Length: 483
Ligand code: F0G
Image (cartoon, rainbow, N blue to C red; front, side, top):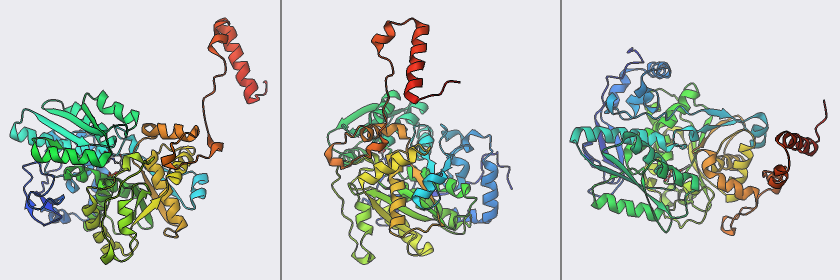
């Protein structure tokens, strides 16, 4: 076996293929949708079969050895290079510390409340504090390769976003620098202040329009069709490849044994759940895992087109219909017409063909349960965002519906860092949700800072007397015993 610290020699032969009409196209150009039928693309490695020359065991050993690699290009998501975009050269790979995010088990108290053992995978511990960095590392590495090949002197990268895609795109573009320039399009007032500060801080051009994410998506699709720009939404299938690394890491953390494991993923534009299913299927094809985990998508009742589709039992009677979204605390996933829906369908069928009925399901949860779940998780040592709370709400819902057993183990995707969504926590603690959210907080959980001494009182005291007075006030308040 090759030494794991050396950049792999294997190169694949990749093509875009359209999920609508099946036509194939070369990867020398940036394509987002099929020029023939407008369908969404997947990327296919025509030489994937060659990877079977290594046994599943050899792959597992290679990936385990690579986990200690000192090669920068292999330290992040490209530990799994051969499975993702094995057309990139080492010099093109951009690494900003993405991937390898921790999986943190729920403490006994929380596991007891949920009725089974589970863990959060903290994808908020990526460089721009969300899972989007996985896809951006891949998409930007490919873009770097194209720029090198074609000698382009200016490339405008554009994306629509509910906040996290724009943060990640702006971060990677600013790191690579010229000839890349980042432009992001946001729904005015519908990203959190923390998310908004990210592309601004990275020096991107930040544009806003009235409306929701779906409106922004239409505008950037129009731009990508008519102008020379590089689209970085998950319509860009290089993003999906990078996000498959989430599945690879989950499998590796489980020591490649996924029997009795369930993976919960919040669904918005549906890129993430596509990548997660696609990633597990690749591992299964190569015998790296012998069983698929069960995958549960979770959506809020305020933005649930994928749930609506799968809620019809008979596949022949299912009809996909976009929905009009209403305000959601899982704001990053508040999407009525997910671009990757055809990809979900494609992989869901493959998943069920191997794993049987129940191996892929979509759950609907309430806004109330999303908020309660996020607060409950974080009060037990987690750092889940509202979408992570949505996954936990989904786990409880699955338990309630009898879809998951006590002896299964669930891994929930905390897709972003709690701090990006702290405004929703503030509204919970101060009971100030606008009525459209329909969230009534548990006021027993309210938490707020207390000023123990007024500024005016401080001004009247000498520094030592102030320290003394502050300590005494605190000791009295907490009922501390003297030593
Ligand atoms: N969680 C977070 C924190 C997100 O930012 C998103 C999507 C999702 C979940 C849903 O993932 O779209 O792959 O199904 N955010 C996109 C954005 C849409 O623009 O940042 P998905």
